[in-house]
Every structure is written in structure tokens, then in C-alpha cells.
Length: 212
Image (tube, rainbow, N blue to C red; front, side, top):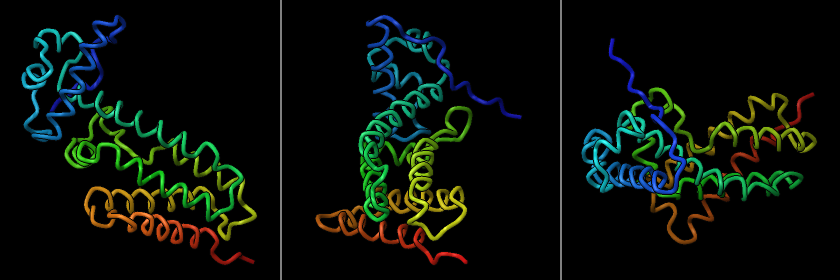
């Protein structure tokens, strides 16, 4: 049975110089992933591009998988900064307006370094911390669920946990494929049309027909 690669860093950089070294290594890993893909990335190549000795790399990261995990964590932090700021005011908004904001922010999240996102979503083996590659993450699922709890009087669905799963999965699939594989859909006014249609789809499901 193949041994799982270690995806945790060896140590956390605390001083300014060591943080700069780690940042250089993570940035170099991201550039190599975009240019050459996961399979062609190696610790030697990452160290070379970062301008760091291989010994210094191994001080902080035991494997390329650990470096990729750091890239994923940074990418998700960038995404969540966008999501939190965009959705901070969604509570209490009418259903159609709130759902449209959820769809729009999902599009924006996928457009944060889409080439890197494509590599992370499609090429990375799912082991250890690398299993956590999500754009519309568990935190966003919680945000969506919390909104539905406060909007029960506008809904035609009863099982809000199931409804949240259906909606978040639909939004993720729609925006992922549009941004990463159908870029023409996002040209000019078509991006607004995509958001409108996605919101109409999700809001229509949520409103449904009230059950007796």
C-alpha cells in the first residue's frame, strides 16, 4: 500500500525573513502548477524558481504536496475574503436578491486566478489536506443555510439542509464550468445574464410550491 505524502508543513515561519522565504516558495509552487501542471512540479524545481536552496525548502515543507496544500490554503483565504465581504449584508434581503448575490459572488470567487483554480480543482490528488479544495466551501454552505433559516416564510421547501446542499452544489457546478470551461459565457453582458439565469434557477427551486 502506497504511503500517503505528508501535507503538513514541517514548521511555521515566525520571523520576517523566514516568512518571506515561505511566501516565495508558495508563490513559486503556484506559478509552476499553472505553467507545467502538478505532475511536472518538483521540490527541486520549486526551490530553483523561488531562488531558495533545497535545504531551506525542506526546513519548512517535507514534500511538494505540503507546498501544494499551502497554495490551496492561500487560494481559499483569498476566496473567503471576497465571499465574506460580499455576503456580510445578505441577511434579511428578499429571496431573489439574496440568491443573486450568492451566485454573483460564486462567479467572482472562481475568477480569482482561474488558471490556478483549474489546476487545483482538476489535477491535485485528494490526500490529506489536499482533500479540502473547495471554492463554495463548508463555510459558504453554513452562510447559505443561515440565510434560509431566516427566510423560511419565503420558501416552498421544508428540508432546509437538503435545500442548501442542492443550491450550493448547483451554484458551484454552474459557476465552476462557466468560469473555467466556458469563458465565452462571461463575455460582456453575458456574465450578468449568467448570474440572472442562475439566480432565477435557484430562487425558483426554493420558492417551489408550498406543501400542504
